[in-house]
Length: 239
Image (cartoon, rainbow, N blue to C red):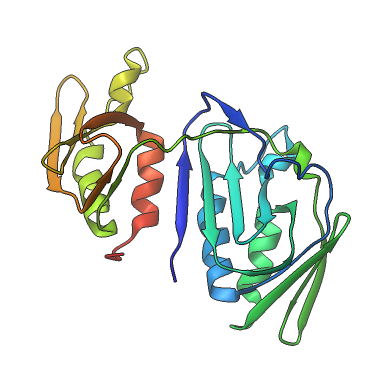
């Protein structure tokens, strides 16, 4: 089963946290494997604010369309996890990250059924059933709109290794913001180079990538906070 993650830095352009036109409470019903849902909640929760003046930021935006999207956002970093699910009624709602995660973690290893009516959420799995309250998705802050012009593909364990071996040299000095992230540079010969520098140390790692779409050569800088989350998510899988 494939997972899809978006690690989203502070916004340049914005979009509503849910899908366009999904404002307010909408009936929602879907089923999903417990293991997939638990993993998605765990990953998205990395970007959830433990305490915030905006209550919705303490929750996960659950959006069900033809797939299930779980989004955590702390106004600095956003993580959107996409997992397969059987959606019978599309909808969107914000659920407490701690409560939702705790409930799903305690369920049996079976198919989880989630249905909503207004802000009430019913969760069923095997012999267990829970009813909790959600909150209005309109209260969830806007997320940046990411336009995918260029892509590069490489094994997950390779990306994790490249981040691990360069992240330590990223600067923490905010007076030079460009040095607080790592430079990713893709060249025409399908080589990805990652460089970090803090004025005293320089770390460089170079690897051949599997696939490039868009321009044959491009570069971008990724903030250290986002890279740290990517490193944790990647794990040791070769997918």
